[in-house]
Amino acid sequence: MSVRPYRVRVTVRLASGVNDPQGNTVRDASAIGIGVNPGGTTTVRGNTVTGGLTGETFRVRFSHLWVAISTRHSDTVDCKFLVNGRGVIVALAHPGYVLFQERTGRQLSDAEAAQIAAAHLRQSLQDDLVGDRTILHLSPEEVLRVAERLSFLKP
Image (tube, rainbow, N blue to C red; front, top):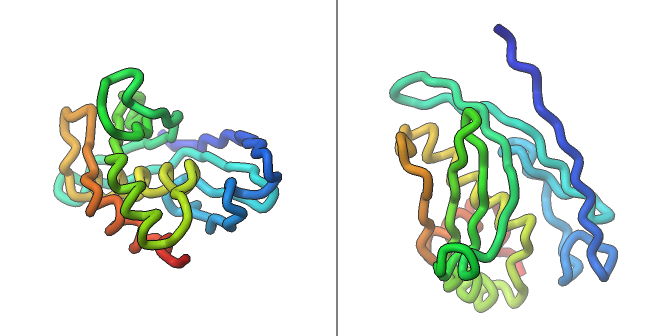
């Protein structure tokens, strides 16, 4: 059975008319399924990841993100993905946003947060660390570590 790529185009209209409120250009992250194009159009597409130990293939699709204080009373921004149709949340600690701003002088955009979450989920799936877990937590330091790996820490 062949798997056809799943593509969704989501248009994000920002007040400033650029990629994020600070006017930063967010690099394409098509390797992890989320890209931001000039003009503020976000492309989200399905992706497959293979587990390193088990060799299992996972179909991953980004769903949405939200501030978790209102839903789980958690000081995180939650990014939801569908992994083989099952919901998995990657929770980014809010203090990581503060550390990001202190280090770069700008705020972490929603598109960058989604890319950080996607990169962490991809690595967790490749390392077979997800299993039956439905929530993966990133500490503030982990948020910065992944942001640095994605070259987001440049001011």
